Length: 104
Image (cartoon, rainbow, N blue to C red; front, side, top):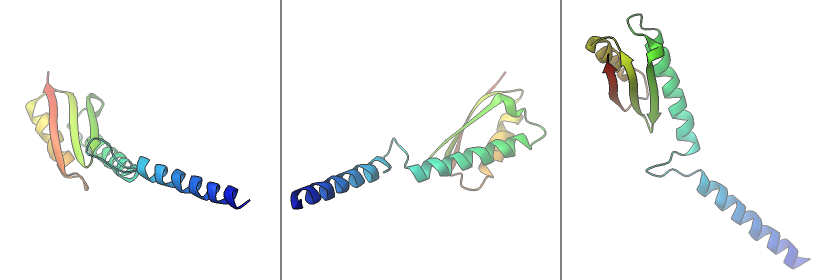
């Protein structure tokens, strides 16, 4: 009985260690909290671009990783590309913006 309890305790500890390790961040992977934070940032940037009347928001794709936002897609003019970058930079939580918008 004592061996069974000890085995179960060790097994429980190993499961907890594995769970916490799986949620840890690395340079190429986000932690669970960072993933949620970046989802919020992405949503805020999309909403800000959508609310900007001069931008066609359906043509702009927004992705974020560790607070860095990447804009991609197509816009009608260089002014629209610059405006989208400005709007994204104005959103709280954005560390940097990589503007890969293409003028068509």
